[in-house]
Length: 305
Image (cartoon, rainbow, N blue to C red):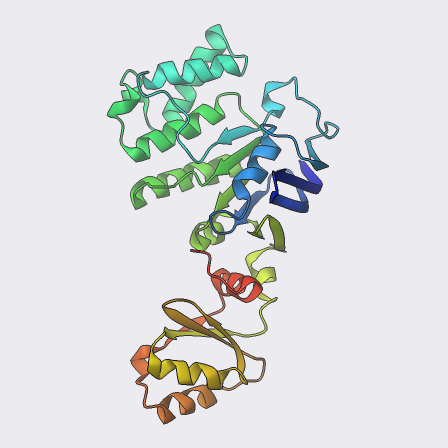
């Protein structure tokens, strides 16, 4: 469905996407996981054809690299991070406008507008202006606009940004239903919970590079430890952190330390050290292996940075 070969995109002296090679099969739900500024949005825009790579190639479906698709369903649907709708227009007027941009007219356009409004549960609000919609409703209409031409590939760039949990779950349900129906989805996020719930495979991005890829289970095998321990940065814990360097990897953030034990390190040794420093157990948070822990291990940073 999608093939990227050594794709690079620069803006002046800044490299936003750095030599990414990636193949995504038809029907996959692929996640791009990384913090803000990792290059996810730039990569999405390159796949959508909004920008051209400085080097490398992007091929969607059976078209040769860089080719424009004449068949509407072969053009990717794009759900951008920012709401790409007109506040002064009604829901239906917005959809008719974007449908015509995709080459839909007459009966076909009216039918598709009705279908996508029903899919995002906004039929009763079709004649209301966008500026009367909640944030979650605007997000759902943003998704509806991307589905009008029934794309085989849907690109979602943080489509749940700024919405409440109920609206987020409604969007998740819609995307999962689309994927079960055969739509290939690429989903960018900096929330590991979203990626773990939705995606069959995940690519971890940082500074424009793809650091690792695979299923959640495959990614977690790259961790050399089973647990990580986090604790606050204080003068008392600084001395402990210095001693832990011989037992594993210690990553220091402004407010927290993260200790990643080496293979074979015993937690009993760790807690013996904490007792010798007079530090209470309540200071420490023990976590099993997670995607966040893997990102921390690969980059020395958290996904929230």
